[in-house]
Structures are given as structure tokens and as C-alpha cells.
Image (cartoon, rainbow, N blue to C red; front, top):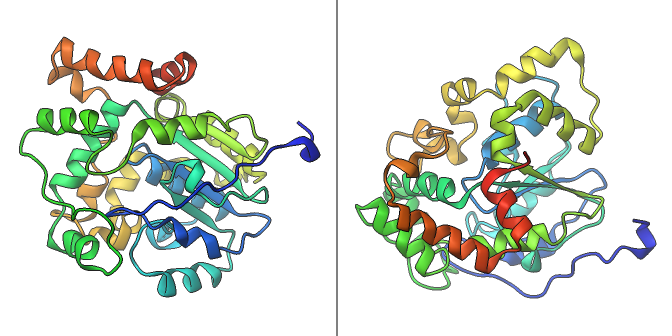
Length: 301
């Protein structure tokens, strides 16, 4: 695909909600080496942020990844605080987004890593995230000026009810999984976009890290390789969760170790009925192409 023939994504509008202010991206001054880490949410975002940080900083210990890699489109902190902090970063920037492509200011300069995960695994992790949120979390989202739409409320005590509401209301109380994954799937062949799947990271983390390094054009220092792998392991991240979670985990009961929860898949299989499992599959078939739905459920075989 030659650059002069590439049709780059164009921003189609803005997205505002209890979490989003997509206008945050409008004033980002992209650099030639920027890295954007994109997901729906709870799909391995923090894991890939950790991997990228380890590649950039060559296995360094004690990196505050939660601070170094901000979620740009989150409404808080406000633009006048967040944007100067991003602009002042002197390291190779690796920024986070949960936006669908049509609401993102897309840059040919940046490299984009998109992480996918089966929506049922996402939902199980999302419920842990939401049900353990504390008053600081609700205060930040609901009381900060600029809220669009209803305030975020505490979730149902039933994860099954939460699952049905999330499917029936297209991602409520957060945002649409289908819009998010389909928009990134549609641009997966662009030269500066790479799709990664949570399952593949679980199955072969060393191989996936090498692929990410190649895509980002970061040479791996073999003398630091074992250190990089250790620092990207779930055990290490759980033990050092305050360095990965936003604000060190201050928004969740139990702190950062609640934010870095289990990192496992398939917990829904022991809870949902066959009919309830099929409900998700049926929606995926309706909303996504067959190839995209298969990839989202399984990753690459």
C-alpha cells in the first residue's frame, strides 16, 4: 500500500459521555514516533502499555506507566491540565484511547496498537472494575464539569443482569463494543495499525512482544530480554499494580490490585446458560463481519 494512495481515516464527529471527551485529541500535536494504544476497555490495555514501556525503556524497573501513558479521551483531568502534561513529555510517547476510529483524530505519523478480547471476558473484567469503584471514582466522573448524559451509577449486584443490560443497551453504561471493534477492524490493513489479541498474548507473550517491537521499530536488547519478560508478567504487574493503575488505584476499593484483577478468560462459562452465551454470539454475528467476529472470540489460531 503506497502512502500516496492510502485513504487515512477522517474524524466524523465528537463523542461525549460520562467518560469521553473526544475533543481532547483535537489539540494533540503528533510526533513522528508517537504510539497509540487502543482498545474497547478491559481488553489488555494496561498489559500492552506495560509491554510498550518495557520496550521503550529497555526493561527498566519501577516505571509509573499509569502516569506516563495517559488515557487521552477521558474527561478528567480537564483539557487545560492534561494536554500540557502530554506535550511536556520528552520520552517516546505512548498514549491510550478507548475511542472508535470515527471520533479519533487519526495521524499517519503515529503507530496504533489495537487489542481485542472476547466481549464476555471484557464484561467480566468490566464488572469487577465498576462494582469495586469507590466514591472518588464516581465523584471524578459525575461531579467534574462537562458531563454529557446520565451520571454513572453503581452496578447491579448480579453480574448476569449486568451482562444482559450491557448487551441489550449496546454497551451501557459505558460504550458500544461493536462500534469500537468494527471501526478498528476496518482499518487493520493500514501500515501504521497492528491488531493484537488478548488470547495470543496469553498463549505466546514472548513472540507477541517481539512482533510489537518489530512493528514499533524498537530493537530488543537481548541482555535485557529476560528482565523485560519478567516485568510484563501478570505476577510482576499484580505485585507492582500501583505503578500501572490510573492514580495508583485510588479509584477502587482494594486499590491498584483490584484494578489489575485476574487476567483470565472464560469465567463466564461457569455462570451463563447456553442460551445466554448464544445471545452474545448471535449479536456478534449480526454486528460484525464473520471474520471479525471469529477473531474477536478466538484470536489468531
